[in-house]
Image 1 (tube, rainbow, N blue to C red):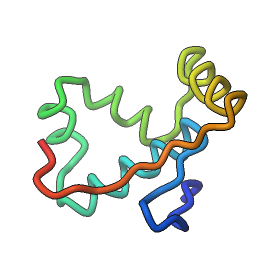
Image 2: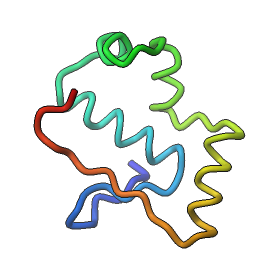
Image 3: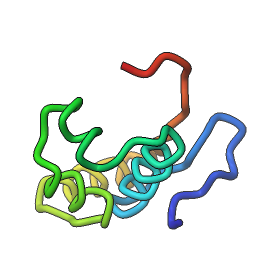
Length: 83
């Protein structure tokens, strides 16, 4: 996994790839297939697969570039009762 789970608050995400890793980790931990999560999230399974594989787009790269330039980190943390 390229996301760092070294913070007390959760997973440190610094790229589209590490975000995909975190989503895949929690999807598997919840026992869901890609098809189930995609359906519940209103996206196509192939799109979810691309996200989990860290597929980058111009938009996702731009967002992470802006975050880096501002000195910001994204931390993903689990909460009970995900909807």
